[in-house]
Image (cartoon, rainbow, N blue to C red; front, side, top):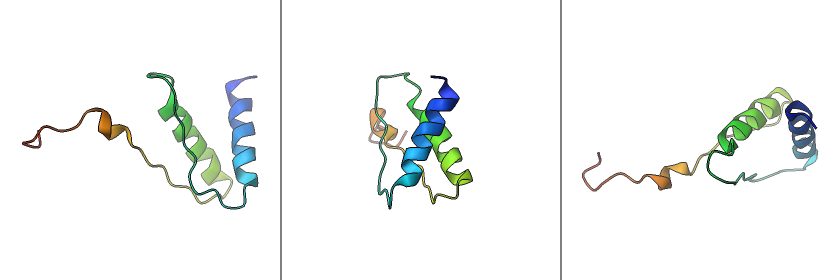
Length: 68
């Protein structure tokens, strides 16, 4: 299955849901999770699905005590 077909399938399944609260994406480092999330976000918006993208990656590199 091509990347475009897989993305279209996932978007179609999400669009069928009555009211998805949160859709999470996890996986190994450098697995293109951010790319997938951005692609889903754009495709869902084009379908008229109210969408917000949130990230929790910031916890990987916490700032030091002085804010630097």
